[in-house]
Amino acid sequence: QVQLVESGGGLVQAGGSLRLSCAASARTLSSYAVGWFRQRPGKEREFVARISRSGGTTYCADSGKGRFTISRDNTKNTVYLQMNSLKPEDTAVYYCATGGLGTRAVEYDYWGQGTQVTVSS
Image (cartoon, rainbow, N blue to C red; front, side, top):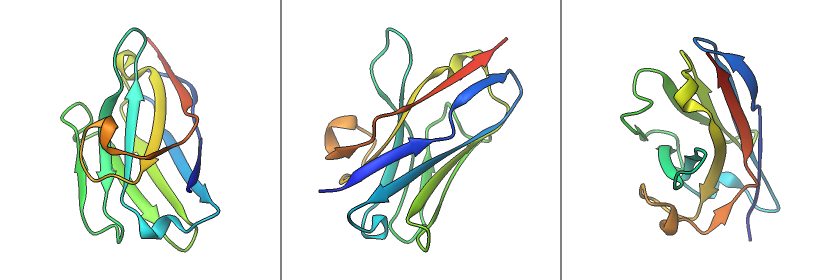
């Protein structure tokens, strides 16, 4: 069992930045690839980015390319999502997940509770 806790969300103006964190308890997160997803109001959960166990391979959805960066610090058991140049359409609950490798939410076994990101125009 892997327990994930997201943090770092909040209210920011368009063009601003936030860094989300995903910390694991009970077992080391370094054993897993990690994905970030988001769920916008009235929409299905969608893939944002993922990172390999070592951090050597990352992949970002088109919606975040050039603006979002996923990284990890395995010494701190934490994965980050740096979000720059935020837009109002980035407003969503952001979740980290593990136990999967792909871009579909159904592939992931463990989820955090989510952190709200609100971008004002």
